[in-house]
Structures are given as structure tokens and as C-alpha cells.
Length: 317
Image (cartoon, rainbow, N blue to C red):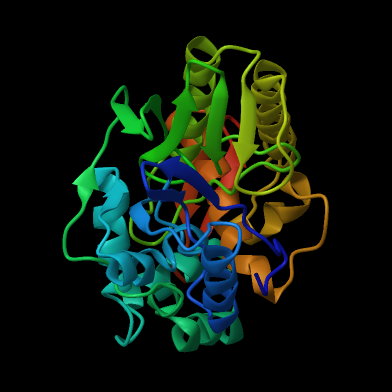
């Protein structure tokens, strides 16, 4: 992928005379060329029987429609992921809503950054081929037969609305998507479509729930990075990392801050233009988490900018 996270792992599971594909990559000519090579080579010219997408981010669904049409294969997803994708794709070709600009102004973006938001708006749909008009819905706890073996659907929240992991319980193999990555934590963000959301609360609750569901000896095949074991240790590390970030954030809020002012408290490297949107979303996810639990206060100035302080340390700014 032509971004900082430069690859995605996609999977093909033997399914009768063909292959069930899990995730697809971005809608790019180079990605389609890679699929042509895979289909003719390692996949032995056999058809795709269905396209299963763990969630609706473009690197996961970008070529889902292209593959579905090519093989007359169904798209398999959770309902919230499919519906959210359709909603975001519909924004392509439309001007950026002023509600979105107000959202980023409240976070502390300057006028040049707001103009960049306006000109780049609609990029989601450009990275995704046209989705099928219908889909096959799966949900948490469902049992999905693939190639005569059963996969259990385990749903997580926070990184996306209804993210699917697939667990083949008979041999302990998990296709983990972005829910459990080996070296990085998945982006957990607030976006203009739901400015008061609490995705970090959803994320942490999902990780705790997965510790109760998944056996520790499973082999996780993630969407980014190498396969790994020790899933309970990794889940604990992800939870601990966010708890530590929340404590650092509360210390930073000893004085009034905008969302863009807390980047240093949350991220180990400088935030440039290419990741400002995700960094802002993740900062707001942590701030909303504290706000929901009475640990932070938000006050909006006359200029439409939000100022945050730790609870009990309001200064009237």
C-alpha cells in the first residue's frame, strides 16, 4: 500500500473447488495486478467462492466489489460494517460538509488545514471499488462453514463498528483482521459522523471480552505484521498501553488543551499532515473517554474551539 502502513495481509481459505477470500487490499491498479498473479499462480486458477471482509476500511474492502463481480461471488460482512461503508462511499463527489469543518475547527485545526480537509474530502470512495448492492450478513457467535470446517465469528468494536475475527476452533487458528495486531495498536478514532462517540470505551471492552472468549494458545494471523501466539499477553499489552496513554493525557490536561495540543502525550512521533486526521480522531477518542467518565471537562469558546481540562482543574478558558 502506498502509505506508511505499507501492506495488508489477505487470506485465501480452500472452499470446495475454490477459495474463500478474507479481505482484499485497496482499489489500486497494482493491487489488481497482484490478485491476477495470485489467482493464476498460488491459487491455481480456481474461482473465488465468496469474499469475506473483516471490516469496512478501504484496505480491507477496496477490491471486494471487483472480486465479487469477477466471480459472481457473494460479499460476506457484518451489517454495521456494510452499511457504514455504503454511507461513506456515498460522500464521494460531494462537497465537504460544514459540520465536518466545524468538527476539525473545534479540535484546533487552522484555516489551511481545514481547506485541506475540504479539498481531500471523499477519498474513502475513491479507494473502494463499487460494492455489491447486497451482502450476506454474519454476526457475533455465528458458525461459518468454509471448506467443510467451521469458523466461529468473534466481533470486536472500537477500531470499526462491528469488526469480524474468524476462529477455527478445531485447530486454534484465528484470522484477526485489525482487532489484534502484533506490534501496533489499531487506530481508534472519533470522526465527524459521530462526534460524541466513545470508541475507546468500546475498544477496551472488546479486548477484555476477547480475553474471555479466545484460548491463549491460538495462532493469530493478523492483517498487518507477522502471525503470532500468546494472544492474552498481547491483549493485556494493548489494554495497558491505552490505560497508560489516558494517565499521560490527564496529566497534560492540568492546563487547558485543544485536541491538537495533546498529540505529544499520546504519540511517540511527530504528527505530520498525512496522519493529522487519524491523530486528531484518536486524541478525541481518548478525550471523549475521559469526558464520559467524569475525568475531563470540555468547554467551547466563542470561536468554536474546544478546550479540555482534567476534571477539577477547570480554568474558564
